[in-house]
Length: 117
Image 1 (cartoon, one colour):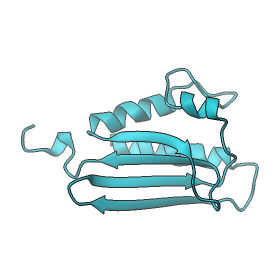
Image 2 (image 1 turned 60 degrees about the horizontal axis):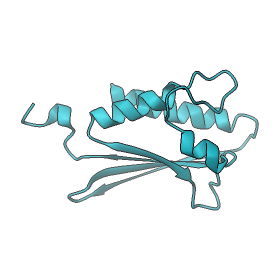
Image 3 (image 1 turned 120 degrees about the vertical axis):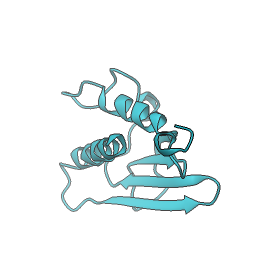
């Protein structure tokens, strides 16, 4: 359930960031890397964030939204970490998706499903 909430929040955020521009898209790429787990990249065609805002993403009480509480991405980080994963925010390196890149990585067997639990 936690990972589902993470993806819902990230996709909702991307849609909100692109709300003013019609025809924008979100690209999701996933890959399974032997021995390294699973990687998921979410690209948006929204406006690029400033470097200052980018460095604050995921910190509690920080939001780029006027009505945001600054809890969503912080909670996402906590949920991803609980699954043994990582989440990183960066400027996209794709010219066709110039907005935010969110990269998630998960182990092939999450801690909650491992035999040791």
